[in-house]
Each structure stands twice: as structure tokens, then as C-alpha cells.
Image (cartoon, rainbow, N blue to C red):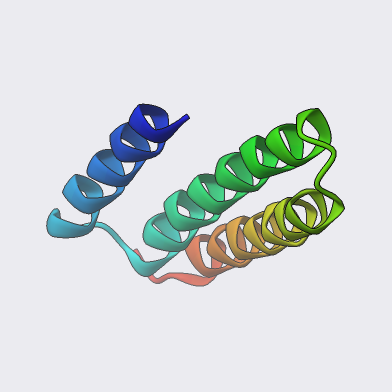
Amino acid sequence: ALPFYLCLYAILQLAMEDDMSEGDKDQMKGKFHEVKGKVKEKIGHATNNPNLENEGTDEKVAGKVQKKVGQVEKVLEKP
């Protein structure tokens, strides 16, 4: 799972360097946390670690919220 995290983190860092809108940045960060949370959930479930599984669920939900905030920001941005 670690190389997967590193790939996602590298993509996120590259995206942050470009002239992206705040809405796009929040959507990308949200997706990163959503995927990271899903991975933590799966690992927690597979290792019978409820704390890690719950942490993953929390991070996944927070990522979904951040992604939705980014979508709203994008709609409200002026062209």
C-alpha cells in the first residue's frame, strides 16, 4: 500500500504547483483522502484492527466532504 500512497501524494503535489483553482485543489485533496481512507479501512478489516478501520472510515468521509466543498467552490468561482 505504501507505493500507492506515494504515487497519490506525488500526483497531489504536482497538481498543487500548477495554477489550479481552489475548487480543483480541494476536489483533488478530497479524492486523495477518500482513497487513503478506503485503503486504511481494508487494511484494518484484513488485520482485524477496528481502530484502523474506523480511522479509515473517518478519513474517507472527510475526503468526500472536502471533494464536495471543492465542487461547490468551483461552481461559485467567477470565470
